[in-house]
Image (tube, rainbow, N blue to C red; front, side, top):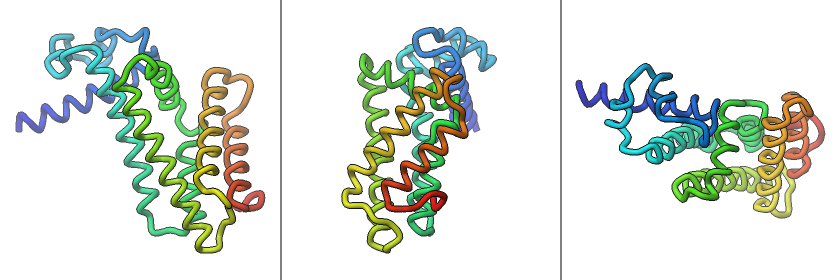
Length: 199
């Protein structure tokens, strides 16, 4: 009973930490901010996480696991490649989760100085690209898609998503959510030989 409550409390703290970091950024978030948002004392926070750095690293890992679970569901879905490609691109498109993208972009910057964040970020990027590449390869084999280099296509699609995410999150007045989603879907469709509206 106690251990179950402890696990639940720890997950609640990680979820709250993600929300606070997404709002304030890694560089401006204090453990006091997270404790207040979670409605707990700082000593309780440090009971679960020995240092601020550990808390931040585990919060980012928690966010990455949530995203990983969503990608896994798409990977395992018994659906045609085009449908899974559509689902994966929509999941990752910049306009779908503003809070999540704020956290990711900030984490990328911190990853240049933090090995734990870099490792988590890299593993998720590699996994997402592999799933995308395999979906494209399946689509080519089934005749639904045409693509001479699935690996390069996966790099380009995610490169566009990442770049547009920075523009959408940092310069929100320059492009709309609808527009970034349209651009990502159109580019992904072209990469795999689909026409406008087919993805």
